[in-house]
Structures are given as structure tokens and as C-alpha cells.
Length: 308
Image 1 (cartoon, rainbow, N blue to C red):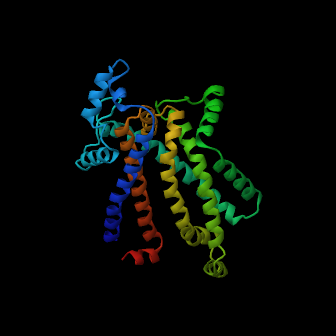
Image 2: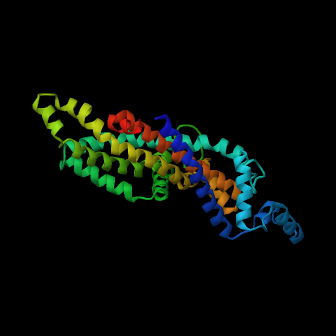
Image 3: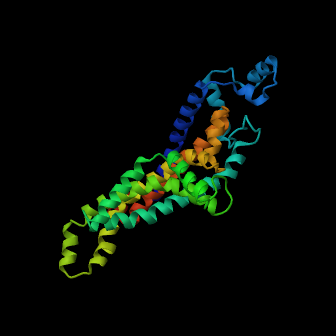
């Protein structure tokens, strides 16, 4: 298991390099001049030209990327063009906010989706199953920014139950967390239902029922444990999706997280800040997937045997 974990961690190096180069190249194609952004609107043309030369903005894109990676490998994520502050300091200050929002959303998704998926599978084609699948289809079809706006109109403007934006206590967390959770809840519910339907038709489940084992015990101890493997896969993927979805949700709700920071940085062509945010998103997604793979080994002994 330790060798497997080490191998997965080493694989992060080429992944990070590929992601950073792709983003760096795309940003270089966007309109705007970083030197003008740094100096401000009142800067003279001579000052802008001098800063471009000093910062290496006139160098080929490969040379600029190589210089950036040289600093990154030494632990320097660069200085923000827009604020003049250290990128790592800005990200460290905002990452807990995004993490809090994303974790709250995934917890809500799991708490809601797993029971609904299990009950829908064990009561296939019932009214509960039909309603659950219709709601799942609606939930997975709604884009997060639209859902967020609808929740703001309904619960902030009309009922005045929750704040429409910002981060000020538990109330301000509820609407953005539910906005993120809705789509992932639908996806996890559908996966759990499909997996449970497949498992409860297996021979060992029928054997346990034939031996007189209580139906709830069969579902909880035998069927659910084996059905959770595909569901855990989706939960891990949804966590990554939620991090990406937080970009829009944080913007809609003015949530001071990395997602909103990245949108603001893209608008100002703040390349170091955008790259720093992308690196954190990619690294978080990779680590979550590694944790999910390790959980497989404890749920299914056959997978653990393959790791050893």
C-alpha cells in the first residue's frame, strides 16, 4: 500500500506540470497587458515598455513558463500583478473558506443521497422511487449559477431568511452549500440506486434472506457495503466537481474563496494568481482521488490484495 501511495504522489508531478503549462499558454492568448495592469491606468508607454522588459513579458512563452516553474519548484508561487501580494499568502487565506463550503456541500449530498438511493432501490418503481428519480433528474440538469440565483431570489429577497452573499456566520453558508450540493446529490443518488439494484439481486443476498436474516440487516450489512464502492467513486469525483463548481457559486454569493479569487484574477489577467488557484484545485482533486482509492482497500478486501 505504501508503494502504491508513493507512486500516486510521484504521478502528481507530471500532472501539475501539464496543468500549469496548459493554463499558462491559454492565459497568454487572452487579451490584455499584464504590465499595464501592474502600473495602472496612469502609466506612460515608456514605463510599460520598461516593465515588460524587466518582468520578461517580451520573452517567448516557453521561456516565461520555465522561469515560472523554476520559482514554483523552489516554493515561490510568485507575486500577484493586481495586488502586489504573495500568491501563496492570498491562497492560504482563502482556501479554508472554499474548503469549508465544499466539505459542507459534499456532506449534505451524502446525507441526503445515500438514504434516498437505498430506499429507491429497495422499493423499485414505487411512488418514492419515481419521485426521487424525477427530483434527481431535475437536480442534475440545473446549472449551479442558475440554482444559486433562484435560491437568492426565493430565500433572500422574498422570505429574507438568509443573506444573499458574503461570509458572516452559519446562515451565509447555507445557500451556497445547498447550491453546490443539489447537482452532486442527484448524481450520487442515481449511482447508489443503480449499484444497490445490482447488489440486491446477487445470489449471496438471496441466500442470506433464505436463511432468515432480517431484511434490514441484509440491506445494511451485506448489500450496502458492496454497493458503496461505485458510490464512493462518484463522491470523490463530485468533490472535485464541487471545487470547480465553487468558482461560479462563490461568484454568485460573493463568497471569499479561491473560486471567486480566480475569476477576479482571470478578469485582470493576473497570471501568477490564476496559476496558483489552478494548482490548488488540481492538487486537491488528486489527493481526494488518492484517499478514495485507499478507502476502496478497506471496503473491499479484494482491492487491498491487489495493492499488496
